[in-house]
Structures are given as C-alpha cells and as structure tokens.
Image (cartoon, rainbow over all chains, first blue to last red; front, side):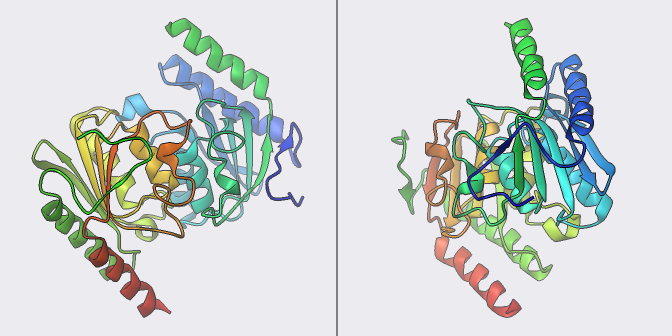
Amino acid sequence: MAMKAGTVAKGRSPGKPLSFMEQALEEARIAAERGEVPVGALIVHGDKVIARAHNRTIELHDPTAHAEMLVIREAGRTLASERLEACDLYVTLEPCAMCAAAISHARIRRLYFGAEDVKGGAVENGVRFFDAATCHHRPEIYGDIDGARAGDLLKAFFKARR
Amino acid sequence: MAMKAGTVAKGRSPGKPLSFMEQALEEARIAAERGEVPVGALIVHGDKVIARAHNRTIELHDPTAHAEMLVIREAGRTLASERLEACDLYVTLEPCAMCAAAISHARIRRLYFGAEDVKGGAVENGVRFFDAATCHHRPEIYGDIDGARAGDLLKAFFKARR
C-alpha cells in the first residue's frame, strides 16, 4: 500500500496488526511490572516474529535501550544484516527521534505504532523525522493501532509513580 | 560556560578538546581500515576517557552501532547508570538524529563534534534536534573541533569506495 510522503494512516493496516500489536502490548506490560516505562515492540519478517523487547533503560543502565532499539539490534543479529528491508516494526508508542532515525537507518519497511506521544514523539509530533530532508529512508507508517490500550498502560504507570 | 539555546560555539572549548578529539580521530581511522564509515567517539568523565568506539554497523549487523551510541552504552555500563550527567562526548562528525536524541536521553553535559554533516546531521543541520520543543535535555555544544581532519578522513574514505 503506497503512502504519500507526510501522511500517516490511522487505525488500519494490511495484514494482522492487532495480533502483533497485542504481543507488543504484552511486552509493554512486562516493562511496567519491572518498573520500566511500559513500551513494547516487535519485528516481523514474513509472518514470523523475529525480535520482541520492552524498554530496559534502567535495568541495562542504557539510555538507548528503548524497545525499538532492542528489537532492531536483535533482528540485525538474527538476519546477519544491518539492513532490515523486508521487516515490519510494531511499537506501542510513537517513536522518539532516536528510534525514528534508527528505524530509518535500518530500512524498516513498515512502522505500526500505538499511542501518540505529544511530549517526546518524532513521527507525528516534534521534529517529524520521516518528513525531514535528512531522512534517507521513510517506512510506510500506520499510527493509532490499538493506541488507546497502549496509552492507558502508560497513564496508569505514571499515575502510580506520582 | 553557559550556551544560549540555539547557538553552537565554533572551534573552541574549555579543557583539552584537541587531545581528546585526536583520540576520537584515531578511532575513526580504525573504522576506515575495517571498511566502516570513519567516525570515532569517546566519552570523558572527569579527566578520564571511560569509553571509546568507532562505527561498527557492518561488523555487528547493527544499524544503531554508530560510534556515539557505542560509547554511550559503554559509559552507562561503566558508571552503572543510564544518566551520564557529568560526562562529555567527543565525536568526529556532527551527530545524526538518532545519536543526537541518544545524547539528550543520556543527559550528556557537553558535546564536542568535528566535521559538519550537511546530509545527515541533526545538530546544525536537518531537524536541529537540540533546539526542538520535544528535546528535554540540551548539552553545551562545541562544533568544528578539528573538523577539517575529520572531514578529510571521510572524503578520502568515500572517494576510495567510488
């Protein structure tokens, strides 16, 4: 499905986005249980999930250990390639600038994300990285996939910590 | 030294930037020898270099394995913290959006970079990440530190591969 530059499809996508996003939400729940910001991600290659992860910045002492970064690194190892051209990435929250640029570097084919992130997102918000002239690969992008559930998880997490 | 938001000091910095940048250039040269884009980085904590790395995206099958990312991850492990508040990062090339956002997430105190990157940079070029409202930590930034040497290394590398 061809996407016009600058557009983001809402709440729909080819394939079986909800079941994959449900698995990403499972990862987000694991993060919350461990005191990490509840975001989960996975990468699908063909019909197969080849990487799944949740945020682990505190556990790993690694500010770059967002769910998206961890699945990109795992998929690269699995496929023995730094280019993930036939891969789709599912993540429960709109990627930040770090993760958006990493998705671009990895040549991810399709990006499905859940909740919008007004404060830190870089797809529909902030620097809108994929629309920048210095972005050299733009995936097809599908936003608000099961976004309410992903957002509720984040809200509950931050409310409990206040 | 306080920096006004949106400004980047040119070719000067407190401390001993050249000697640290020379070490980063050494890392960049190692990358070139290994067929990786020649960019090197290091992180200084106090007067001590606690992490040094060069680009390893091809070797590691990891599109996120830019020099900056590798030193941030190494420094986090060394200091057992995902916050690198007392750390300065030296890199031979202007960071891309992925690395700029990672530097911000890591709370790096000062960023020193070498050559400007018109095509892929995100500090003075492209999305200018540190000036965005969705950037929640901005380091002090010093650009063009030994930039000509870093740029020459990159030009020679890409010319040889054409």
